[in-house]
Length: 48
Image (tube, rainbow, N blue to C red; front, side):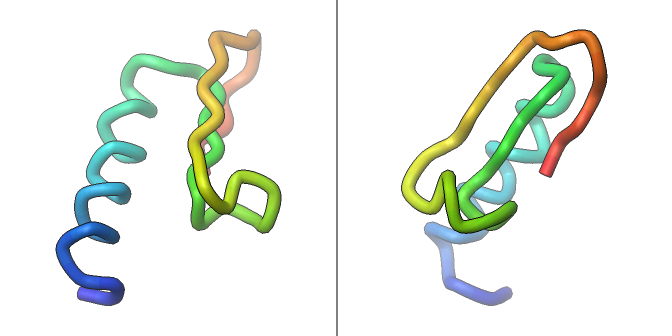
């Protein structure tokens, strides 16, 4: 897997968090959340 164990761990967090939050931006979604996640309970769904 690309990025080693840490990258796999962060992708796993993203995958599982999308089950609980409607909007999620992860470090690999774009340049803005490069060091953190964004979680939201907004009205539409978008998990990246």
